[in-house]
Amino acid sequence: MRLPFGIDKIAARIQLRLLQSEIVVETKTKDNVFVMMNVATQYRVNEQNVTDAYYKLM
Image 1 (cartoon, helix red, strand yellow):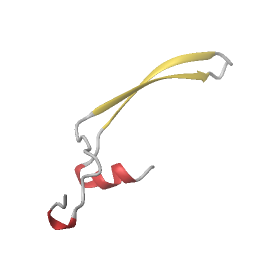
Image 2 (tube, rainbow, N blue to C red):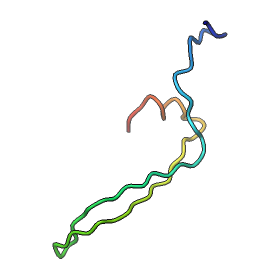
Image 3 (cartoon, one colour):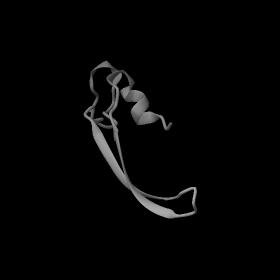
Image 4 (cartoon, rainbow, N blue to C red):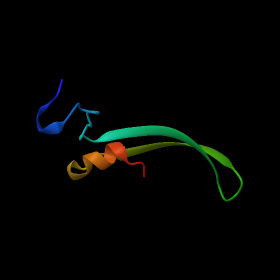
């Protein structure tokens, strides 16, 4: 199936809403103690950079 304007198919659908990624990280403090930390990172895709968000790895 051929879509208009020379597009063959949609590669993926990118969500523009705010997303959150949660991970557990083990790190060593200055006094040589190992601690486990829960880290949550919130991110979203900028509308002007949807192509970069899908095809580029930072």
